[in-house]
Image 1 (cartoon, rainbow, N blue to C red):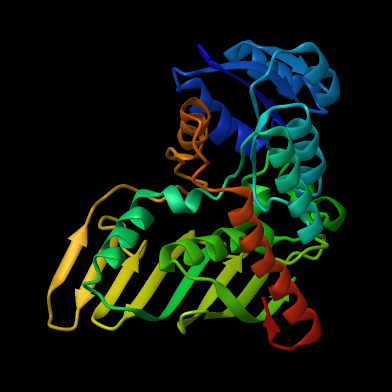
Image 2 (cartoon, one colour):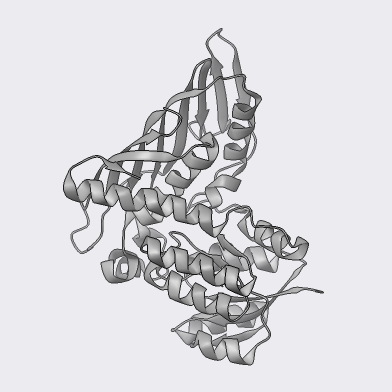
Length: 339
């Protein structure tokens, strides 16, 4: 394979700011197609990066030679389009949350297996340098086990990010399935699972719409997680952090605390019980206001070129989705829910 021929389905903000620029910067990639119901968005990207613009992804599949696709669509379309792409023989990079229920996610995984293609889910928080550094520290064992944690992800809402502003699909339940929980909460559920190398086994959650009356999905969630290895902690997702973003995690360990994303300069700070403080300036965590490389595209293309399993598989995406589904059930029933 000389270059990986990539098509992008959905030409909104996540494609414009993350997927397309990172593909364009990758010498192993040729962008061959862009698809969006609003043809002008696809045409704008094709004019800049080459390839052909479409409004119908099935027509695009029939006319182009494609090796891989990015699915950058509203959440409710992730599964059907990813399944169609996998069955057409293309490797699939799907945005998160990968699906709107367990059955859809499992069908996505099976479609990729049946077609012998890769399915990767865009949980980019795992690949942010501060998160990688924190996990590296945990793996040394010097901090001991994680006893408790808090992790949060919040900003002012998709109206400040989405290409459609306040009219975005993000706010419509039939297209989005969930709000802040799907946009941000699933990222942090995935992050904590990966960072602690552990699984969430029980949740208790409040998932509410507190301040966006035109929205039919949640704008805030506060969740309690119990992990299989015993740690407990909180996860907060919010679309109402109207002054400044938050993407921070604090791990309270046997031998001290690891603070991630709490300082504007040193993104990882380790404070040990003996008084020693280690500070690491290892690069930024991406925000809506300050886009940095996610690492997702490079990892996806590397997987294809080397014929190796993606770093964030469909199975991993499913496990993180199941945490969110359990939180929604907990919020609805006002009971603790096993995952």
